[in-house]
Length: 258
Ligand SMILES: Nc1ncnc2c1ncn2[C@@H]1O[C@H](COP(=O)(O)OP(=O)(O)OP(=O)(O)O)[C@@H](O)[C@H]1O
Ligand SMILES: [Mg+2]
Image (cartoon, rainbow, N blue to C red; front, side):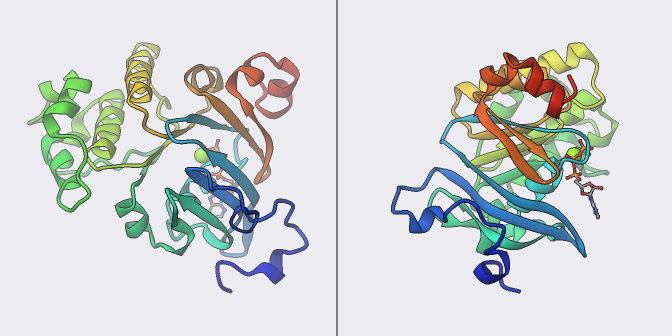
């Protein structure tokens, strides 16, 4: 099946293709994404746009499809995108493989952080800059995360969880990125470390890096975000301001159980 297979999904499609509507495209647009792990149909017609410089909290209960949606956008092999379009800065990401999406500026910081064993902090950062597009200098990353500078010669995998998260974010910034996708950056971290990473993400926000943050700690994510998208069973059930979700206890209870 080709990625854009209109006939197969015509029955479930609700949103017109932004390409054919004549309106100018958003900076990022996910249109009618349907993605599968083998036979398991998981991402079921996800639609959303992101403006340049916006921070979006992508929320939902366990198993709602948040990680799967990020993986689909980053064009990883699993889940496989069977239908839909992904556009970032006028380029068709749905036609790209993962390495091409990365070259085009999509950076996924996965939940497990993927720090490379046997390499120091600095080597992990340098490895990210082995090929273009190169982003921040290593020194600038150390300015944002002084702890990484202090531990530059230490093996990356021996860092604490919070420092590994900083390294994973630093490694994303070491490349010239257009869209930062963070999957549960606060997971398993002590509150004091969460605060430190929150401060850094607030800095990143000031720099205007377009970001999607997936977090179980929805309140923390909403406080950082401009907008919230809530997923349930692989579909978008809410798309609005972060403030609207913070102010709507019934909505939070229904879809976030908080
Ligand atoms: N590799 C896989 N193969 C088959 N099904 C999978 C796979 N990974 C995830 N799923 C299923 O896809 C659905 C969505 O999972 P996903 O990990 O995207 O949810 P999530 O919203 O990130 O949840 P969590 O909050 O627990 O991280 C779940 O039902 C999950 O069991
Ligand atoms: Mg997840």
